[in-house]
Length: 287
Image 1 (cartoon, rainbow, N blue to C red):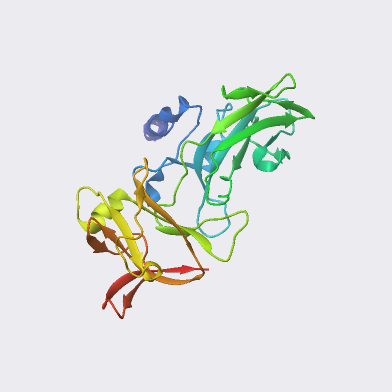
Image 2 (cartoon, helix red, strand yellow; image 1 turned 45 degrees about the horizontal axis):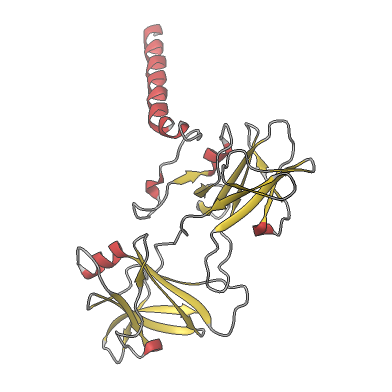
C-alpha cells in the first residue's frame, strides 16, 4: 500500500514536470508565465498566437507594448470571447492605481488592472478606422498618484518638451479577421454610402481556384455591372488581397475572379442562385 502510494506520488510529480516543460518553458524567455494552445481557434497558421487572459494575469514583470489576441473564458456569453488589441503593461509594485493615457484617449487616463504579481495591464482596442485610413501610431504615458512617466520597457520615446518623454508604439500591421471576406469599416463621419473592404488571403483564394499561386484577383457584382475589368483587389505584404468600395446599404450578390476563374467567396457561407447567371453567387448584406 505504501509502495503504491509512493509510486503514485512519483507519477504525479513526473507528469507535472513534463507539462511544465512543454507549456511554460517557451514563454518564460518572453516574460510570460504559462501558455495557451491556440489550435482550437480556426485560424490560418499565419495568425499570431492566442493567449488566455489567465496568461496575462500571471505576468511576473512588465513587457514592451505589443499586439495581442486574448481568449477570455469568462466572457459570460456561453463561449470564450476573443479580445484583440494593444497590450500595455506597467510594473508598479508599490502603487495601488496606475492608468495609461495617450492620443488614443485624448490623454484621458484609462485605469489599468493589477494582476496578482503587481503588474498593471490594459488591452487597448485598435483605434477605429477614420475616413478609411488605418491608424498605426500610438503615443502614451503612464500615470500613478498624479505623476506622469514614460514606459521604461519601451525604448521608442520622444521628448515631450517638459523635461520628460512620451512613449511611442507603432503597430506594424492591422489584424484582419480572415474568416470574413468583407466588412463595413467604421468612420468618424459616415455618409450615406458605407466604406466596405473586401479582404481574402491568397491561400484561401488558391484553394478555391485550385491553383498553387495567385496573380490577379477581381470582384464582380451588381454594383459594377459584372464587369471583370472594373474592380481589382491589390495584394498587400501580409498576403491578403484587398479592395475598398463605397456602397449604399443593400443586398449585393458577388463573385471573385481568380486568374480568370470565377469562384465563390471562400469565407462567406451566404450563397444564392443568381437568376440571370443561373449559378450560385456569394451574397453580402450591407446595413
